[in-house]
Image 1 (cartoon, helix red, strand yellow):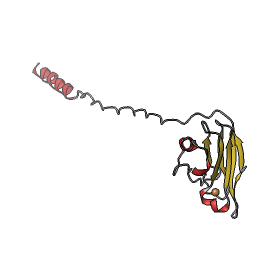
Image 2 (cartoon, rainbow, N blue to C red):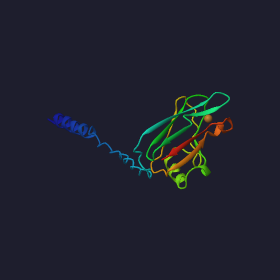
Image 3 (tube, protein in one colour):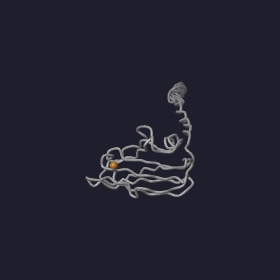
Amino acid sequence: MRKLYLVAGLMALAACGGEKKAEEQQAAPAPAAQQAAPAAAPAATGATWDVDMNFDGKVGTFTPAAITIKAGDVVRFHNKSGMPHNVVFAADSIPAGAAAVLDAAMADKVASLTGPMLVDQDAVYTVSFAGAPAGVYHYHCLPHVAFKMHGQITVQ
Ligand SMILES: [Cu+2]
């Protein structure tokens, strides 16, 4: 009888020691706070125009060099050859009030009215003319300004 109690006691101890401790709950990381969207430029509502950018070693070209669009249209500049190219609007050769509109519409600017350098073949740089005042917008490519690489967009 005594042995039986002893065994029962050992079993009770074993059961007690074998109890698993409750796993510590790890604090789950708080979900990332939603970032507030940056103030958006007016939405483009019109047509899309395509302009190719080329440089043959002698002359840089935006093709077509001159286009006439409507406010709300979008212009896509395509990196075709002789890159890098970029799109720079001449601050003194755009309509009054246009600088603020373009600065809001141009992504990844390196300076006011100055688009990023496009180095990849077929890279596309898109500029929305939503809310753009009517008038003539002169622009050029900074690396090739000495190679006559300039263009003109007339907003009706
Ligand atoms: Cu260029």
